[in-house]
Amino acid sequence: MPEWYLFSVAALVLLGTQRFLYKVAAERDCSATLTTAVFMATVTLLSGLAFFITAEPTGNLHALALLALINSLAFTLATVANLQALKHLPAAITFPLTRLSLLVVIVFSMIYFGERPGLFQWLGIALGFAVVALLAREAGSATRPHGKTATGMLLIAVCVLCGAAAAITSKFAAVSTSKAGFMALSYFLATLFALGMGKKWPSVTTAARTKDAVKIGVLMGLLNFFGFYAFLIALESGPLSIIALITGMHFVIAIALSALIYREQLTPPRLLAIALTLLAVFFIQL
View 1 (cartoon, helix red, strand yellow):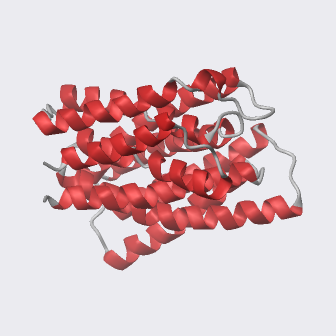
View 2 (view 1 turned 135 degrees about the vertical axis):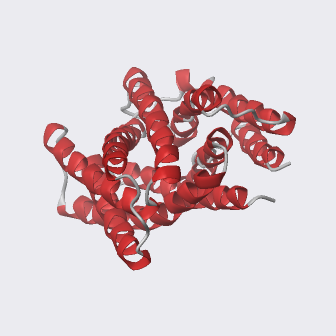
């Protein structure tokens, strides 16, 4: 079993748990931009410390700066849009639909990197998209109370495009720059972007909601730091198309936790989607 696969699975678990906290923030009506800013500031601090402790070579500084800029803007937009989308659509719909970004990533990987998945890996990819298609069918009638389907779907479209851009720039950074340095600069810029969006996208909040946003943001940052670092280690030697698919299935963990904690209904299609996801991850390592 290749090392990149093990790091991909670790990223899957960590990022899936972190993604569930998006649901927690939405349920507690926390400010999306404040939660995002605290989360990204936490990752900035941790990755900055890792960069100085490990003394990892920075590589091409110009490339690092450009990749970090694109990645941070794309990731910030995707994160804030995801948090807002959860206020309009259930987690079981929002999370899988945002994974349509995988299609963009896979096509790019095949064209630019010349990646050619094997038979079982293609089967895993097919199962992954079957999960997305299965759950997407529920989107039409799955609006949350006081939510708007059209608004939720527009926000998901933003997540798809920005998520693909973030994944692709991460691959370039993993093979050509310092991973910790890239994370530190990218998340620092993302923190600034999130704070800037907070002024353009204000929300009514209370002291209790602010406190919740800070707590949730810090916990998200801890999980994301270890999860994203594992993702970059995997990308350094593994195929972008397959690694992106494995880690992209992290929404299954969020769906399961949402059902357990918030009693969101696990319909037969959703249970089938979870089973297919586990099967997809299994086939990819064959």
